[in-house]
Length: 274
Image (tube, rainbow, N blue to C red; front, side, top):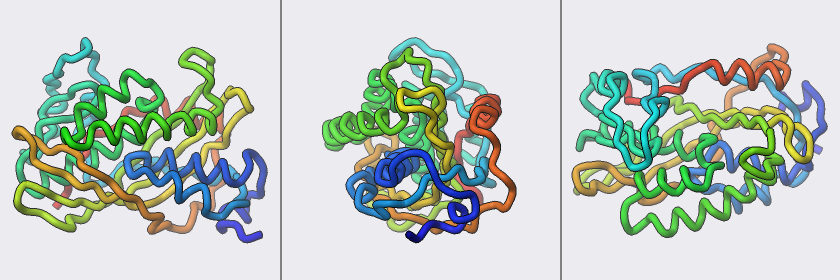
C-alpha cells in the first residue's frame, strides 16, 4: 500500500486509515469543509507521527488579540491588535475570538480570509458555544445558518476522531493552522476571493480511544468574502490538498512534549506581506 514518504520513513500505526484522513482534513481545513472528500481519499493511508513544523508565516504581524479575555458579546480593543494593523488592513478588535474591523482593500480581504481560516481550524471550534458565536461574528448573514449546521455536523466527527467525549474529559488537544501564503483570485464590487495556503498540526493525548498521533497537513483554502456593514464577512470556502513540501528529516518530537511546548507559544494575527 502506497504511503507518503514521511510515513514510509517512520512506519505505521494508530487510527484506522479512513479516520486519520477525515481527522486531518477536518483539522486543517474545517473552514473549507473538506469532509466528504477526506473520507474517500487513500482509504488505508497509514497514521504515522511525521515531523511537525510550526514556523510562523513571514506575513504575520502582532500576537493575536484573541488571547485577551472579554465578557460574552464584548469587543476587545487590544493595543497589540491595533499594533498588528500597522499596514492599516486590520483587524482592529476581537469579538468572540474573531478578529474584525478590516480595511475595504485587497489586503484587508486577505487579512480577513487568513484570520477566519485560522479561527475555524483551532481548538475553539470544539466548544459549541464559542464556535457558534465565532461563526455568527465572521459569517455573512446569508451564510450563517448553513455554516452553523455544517460545523455542528463536522465537529461531532472531529471530536470522535480526537477521542474527546466532553469538555472536561481530560483530553489534551492540539489544533493549530498557520497561513503560509496567499493569492487574491477575485476582487471588486464589494466581494473578494482569496486563496490561503496553510499548514496545520493536529492530534490529542488522553482521549477515549488513546492518543491520536500529532500530524501535520498542507492545503489551500479558498475563501469567498462580501463587504457587509463596513467589514469583510465570509460567504463560503472550498479546499484542495497541497502544495505539500517534503517532510523534514529530523525525528518527530514525542507527542506529550510537543503538546506541552506548543501551548507555550501564542498564535499570531495575520496581515499580508508585500
